[in-house]
Image (cartoon, rainbow, N blue to C red):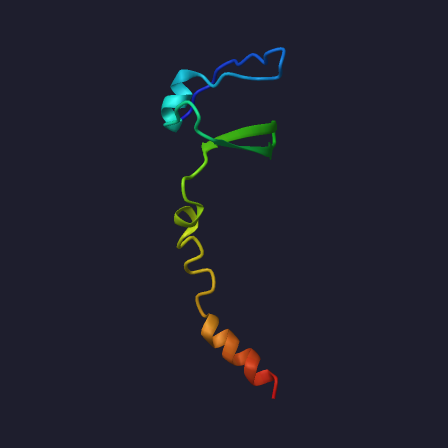
Length: 82
């Protein structure tokens, strides 16, 4: 998905997120948004995403496979202590 628009900063430093973007993000009045600045080759990008209701559910299982052979590693380390 790609959508580009021009947004004006108000005198108070505020912006209005366009309705099409709010619909795409599935956010309503009062929804908390996470804004992330990311450095790119073109400059800095702003990434918006709705704050999850439950952070645990969001990250559960995200580390699966990171330490695929942890038991062998731990056994090897423990045997080196002798």
